[in-house]
Image 1 (spheres, rainbow, N blue to C red):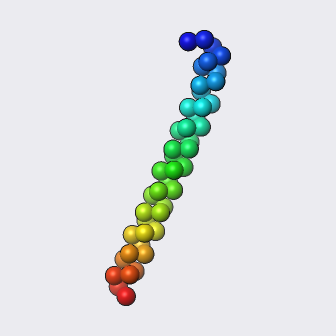
Image 2: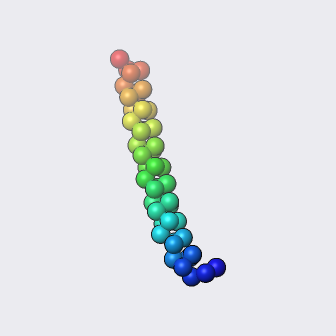
Image 3: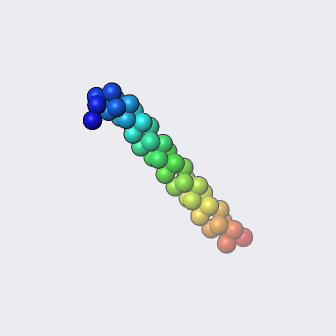
Length: 44
């Protein structure tokens, strides 16, 4: 690999990893909110 290619790839990979982590946590939050609201709906 040329060194400039690696220098360009590393930040892209880091950004992709952080972005996927943000998406994962967002979906976890949304699913937990949905499960809590569905539980509240069952008790009504």
